[in-house]
Amino acid sequence: MRHPPLTIVLSLFACLLASSAGGKLLSRSADIPRPFDQVYAAVSKYFSPDSMHDFQIVSQKRSRTKAEIVAKHTVQDKAKWSAWAYCKVPALQLLDTLQQGNVTVTVKVERESAGRTFVTVTPDFQGVYQFAGNTRTQQCASNGVLENDILRGAGASDSDLN
Image 1 (cartoon, one colour):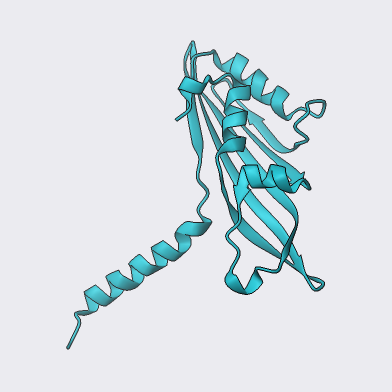
Image 2 (spheres, rainbow, N blue to C red):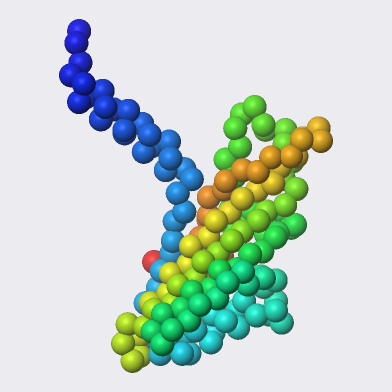
């Protein structure tokens, strides 16, 4: 049985897309009925050194209508990490122990109108695992809890969240 080359190429392309989807970062967004300056101030406060959230700002950019904050956080508390992220561990590494979780979050704030601001939160979760002295890093998937917390901190209500 002979397969046309196009069918084989399309099949390989589909497999490649499916295998790379696991590492894709997913965002959560909300349209917040508050002015840009208020939303930006709330997001900045969420990530400030004196807040209870323990994030360290990596970079921060702002113009009159757009802003972006990138912040990092290391999580030692396994219960908190489990609430924030799910790490699919390969079967051969089921005995590995989570040592810490690292999250880098990018928050984009955009003015839509005088009284409306659009906020997008994109997290990158990575679990650090160890077994028998060997350490490895595993890409993890978000459970949505952190993103919703940041969006609430920016001023979104529960009805603003999808």
